[in-house]
Image 1: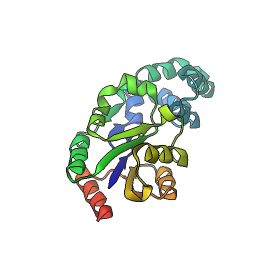
Image 2: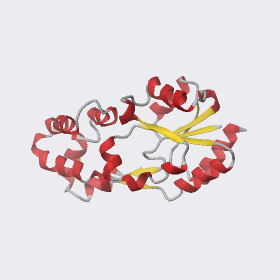
Image 3: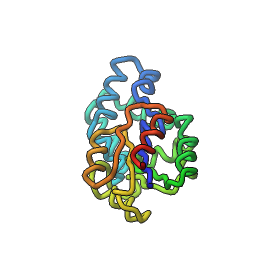
Image 4: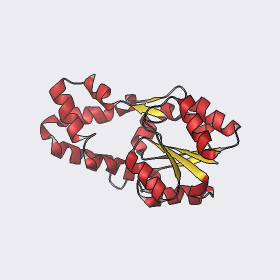
Length: 198
């Protein structure tokens, strides 16, 4: 079986509220969150069709009085993601059971460069696809098709794990088995994967 993981909020914690809350008072943190994290233009990072500065200008346009805070938040983004301690043991356990393990992530190149350590589980995997390098994002079919074609497997022979219900629905539409990740411990997640494979 092929096991496909999302990265953010599954293998890596991305606690945005705590991250901005440590930098700014509540009104500034809320403004930065509205301008960036809750802005649909955030997905432009993951598509990588615009420059980082072009995307930042979209954020600043939402909250022009907070340009300094928005730029500081972007500059410090590398301290936001934290790799979950159980990620590598889970991957190794799945591989030891004879599975191939991949990632499929809406992720942007800047974050790969400023926080490479949180992705140290990738060498333990059999491969994967970052949205920023193929200019496609979940939940749309193209990125799922790219993954399957690159590694030569059918969606029906794979289980996809993601915290986003939209991405789960997108994967199911492509024919994947799915698990909606809601924070369950990795032992429980492993059992869910095994149950699907049985």
